[in-house]
Length: 487
Image 1: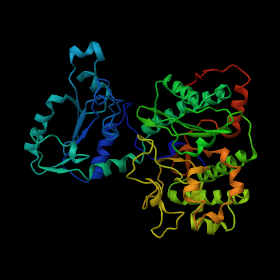
Image 2: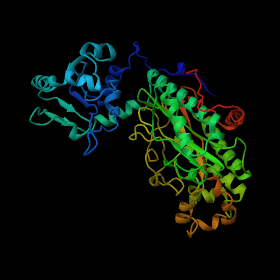
Image 3: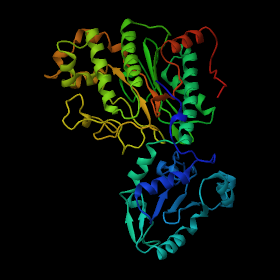
Image 4: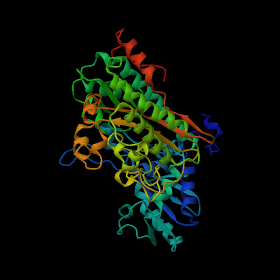
């Protein structure tokens, strides 16, 4: 079923630099304009309000896609007619070097980045005026209206702030070989960090230790976190984005660890659920894990170009309904009836997956889930955030998507929306349900590359029996804070 990335007919940059020029050219083709100027702002450094301490800095992803620059206070222009990409960087302030170091020089930036020219920020407005004199009828493209330069410095002939963002989104949704390499690297580091957690979990007393060792394992390889670590134990695993990570592990059955590293601005997104002891603490926990495992494995095997992702989302729900009926949690209706009613949303409330790339929830303008306009409540994507929206294109080679089914037992949400509902309550067995609250929730998530004839799983973090063996073996030795060194 799987095949290697070489089967994808993707253009590969002939240089090892991040292929910024190639990306920008693709964006200009999406715009469909033979003339005009693309102007993109990078993220500026700024401090916390009423403080001299800096906020955590993060580069604007749309700027990075067309520049490959992970340095503050930069911007770029691309002249569509002349195919000329200019990067603007801040001047070095000698008096600040002793405090904060320095950024790249013009010569260093030219060597580092795939651009045609590097200039200093103070030259920008004069360059824009020069462009304007030769392009009096051309369009000045910006991401948002407030990204245009101040009128006192530059008044473009025509401004468009509607076309650039969707043009970049359309390009970003298909990854080239360089981008896939970065996502693969992020996944390798993430797998290493997940292994470190598994080897040490039996010695941990608190969720915070799980977060600590995961972050440490990533930082030791110079990788950032793609998103906040989710390390929910027991009933906390029923909260989808639980990030407090501060409760004791004693008496808890499972941990749902959703955590991924970021490498050179590209994200991984991996979730593993496992018993803290390395052995299944209850039949209920094992049963739910096996249902979610089946949901994920079945859906991954169906991935290929041309498949509507929402079709797989629907299949995952069908498998969940069948499993919950077998366990007696759902009752009194057929699979088809429960699917039509949407009662399964009580236990599987989110979409099957999303695009992955420069953002962990990448290019929200290109949803991966699709549905017919006449949709039942199970298919009601209006209840979900993007990418669970309508009219998404089918899967294509070069897309990277997550597949992350889950079943959860959120006491609060079940009481609020389902157990007293005249529509749903009769189909949920409350006595049986009570036995499953301690399970909390199970989610399993991998990052999948769509190839020309199928897929490739980029995620190598252990799961299932492999994860249990690591926990069991790790508990026999003193593995405290021990990391793999093979990445």
